Image (spheres, each protein chain N blue to C red):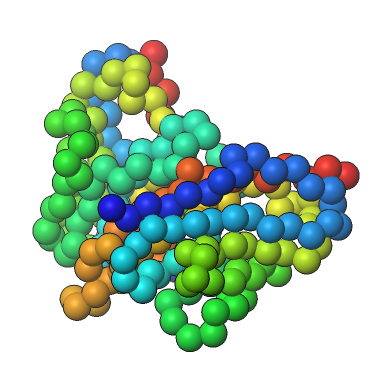
Length: 114
Length: 117
């Protein structure tokens, strides 16, 4: 069965430090991968997506993610974190049906220290 | 700007009193989804519409129903809310391509937070 694992439930980084959020997926075919961010009391906003091609994808707000098929991973990175990046981050995999249904990871809560 | 709009943002209802949440979109997407999200959890898909075709998730309680009168609007009806139904309800849309929609990102509204008294 398809699944998405985000090993880190909660991460705290200092403002200006680099960030990496981990995501591992289990899926037999080529996955469609997404990262979403959710600020408190808000909906989910798409940060970036990977379908094919270049395995390093750029997203909004200075985020990037790298698809590594050999490791079944799609980790999210940012070189320098801002206080406004504090939020919940969800990794998701599509491609499981033709209806666009997503399978979400459990999420990682990012706290940013001043 | 094209968007997904959910009303109201906050809804309070009484135990057992039917409640309806609404979602509208200006993206002209043919797929609409309803999710339930409880605190510190991932969104859980309840059901979705592909055009007019309704697709219920196997574990969605019968207490939850949905209507989609046209492309732009979709409603979530909770017939007899229980305390366990208190949650954030998220509406999302995506573009169905007919062959495969799985590479299309979903666009989310800001959600309706439902409280049960």
